[in-house]
Length: 283
Image 1 (spheres, rainbow, N blue to C red):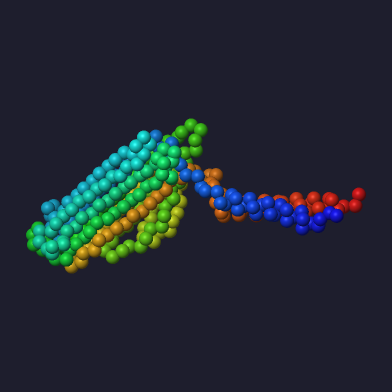
Image 2 (image 1 turned 180 degrees about the horizontal axis):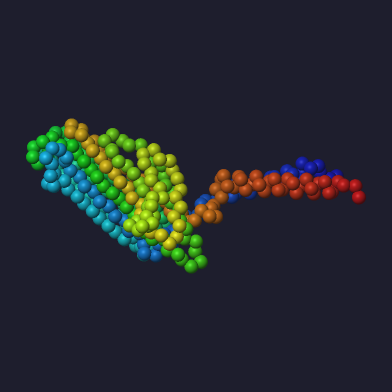
C-alpha cells in the first residue's frame, strides 16, 4: 500500500536534518592568507615611553624604547618588543615604572603550522609611584605611553581572491589608571586616501573588518597609563586579531547550515507533496 504524504515528507526531512548536522559539525578551514596575498610580508613595530611626570620634570625623568621586525613566510613568526624602565630620583624601595609594548604576528598553516594568521598586540608592566619624586625633587606620577602596530600590503594575486577580513575581538573596559585604550584599522596610511576602517575602544563589541586587495593597511594599538602619586599597580592588556579569506563565499557554520537546511527543506516538502499528489491522481 502506498504511504501517505507523511512518508514522502519525513524521508527527505530526516536526510536533511542529518545533512545539517554533518555540515555544521565540520571544522572551519584555517590557513595562511597574508602568506599568499601579502608578498612583502608583515612589519610589526612597537614604541613605548615611560617616566615620572611632575612639576619641573624634564628629559632625564623619562626613557623610551622601540623595535621593528619584518615577518615573512620563510620565517613565519616574529615579535617587536619595545621596553623601557625608569627609577625615580627618590622614592620608596619598590618605586619604578617599566613598560613593554609588543606586536607579534604569525603566519598560519600550511606555512607557519599554527592555524590562522594571528596578530597579537600587548601592553604590560608596572607603574609604582608610592613616594616617587622627579629629578627636581617634586612628587611625580608614573606614566606609560605606547603603540604597537602591524603594517602590510595586500597584493593582487593571479587566480586568487585576496580580499581579506579581520576578526576583531571585543575590547575590555578601562581598568584603574588607564586613560587610553584604542585599536585602529587604517587603510592607505600616509596617503591622501587614508581613512579609518574601524576604531575600537573600551567596550567595543567583536566585529569583522573587510580589507579589499591592492591597498596597504595599518593596525595600531594606542595605550596610555597614568598612575597617581601614592599608588603602585601593575598593568596588562592583550588583544588578538585573526585574519581570514574573503567572506564573499563564507563557510556555512551552524547558522548558515540551518538557514540552508530550512531552504532545502521547503523545496523538498514541496517536491514531496507534488510527487504524492501525482501518484494518487485518478488516471
